[in-house]
Length: 391
Image (cartoon, rainbow, N blue to C red):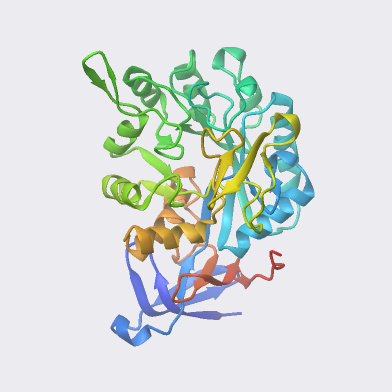
């Protein structure tokens, strides 16, 4: 049956005011323009592509590391409520047997009927990261390539992205094998020198995890200024980057600078959301990860902080809120802010052939936004979704 979606259609490089999208059998079949000025359509909703979050750890009191039906269901429903139709579930550094348990569970989960958002794979954040820049990751869970990584390659069917520190011994060889296996290699949580970064990039690392957060940056060795992964990512035109646009990890002024250097085509927005996301404010401690191997965190002034107050511990904001932050606080055009939360992440992880933008032939995943850019309705596979209330 033909469906006609009318509104101000957010395309990758412009807004089609008063446009119409035709949907048949869950696929976008046509897009029409009214040809009129935007002033005539101020009362129309915005129609955005389904958002894509390639870095999130949890929500609603749950973490993917739980590897349970309840955790995945609650998190995926929460994401869908906030316009995220596709996501990567993200793990944290933990004993290898715990990570493998998540991988095995994920294989089973994606065979089930769709509940909440669709998952495109797993983002393994750590354990191949720097002790000096580990952030909220547990020190005793870290690994180096010399410890072996066959267990990663065994799950190349579900692992889509891996965050690594370029300076770890044996890393260039590991990167080459990961890239050969079809895994996106992302630099982050590093303490690298320029030589390490260049060697990793030549081996196939072409992306970075949450830029300016737990990442090497400009420093001096004696009289010589040495760049870090931040500066390398900002200066290389083909290098892509994640940004946590929650106004805490990356304040609006820094978001503006990143946007001006990278553009909407090379920088994506990620939530890096953790378990307390979506819950009422509370003084309780939460866990990033699970059990004794998890890191205890609390929420203060709208951001998660590790128990000893040494660093932030992920975001508690949703991707739709970050789009609003970019538009309202950083002054980024709406179509570019939406692109950074949809088409750009889809391109980074290689799923843009059927999602990430409103284009003919792509899956009909769309989000209806009101004039305040808040989610009103979510369409997935051409069907408007009904999900439970958060509280």
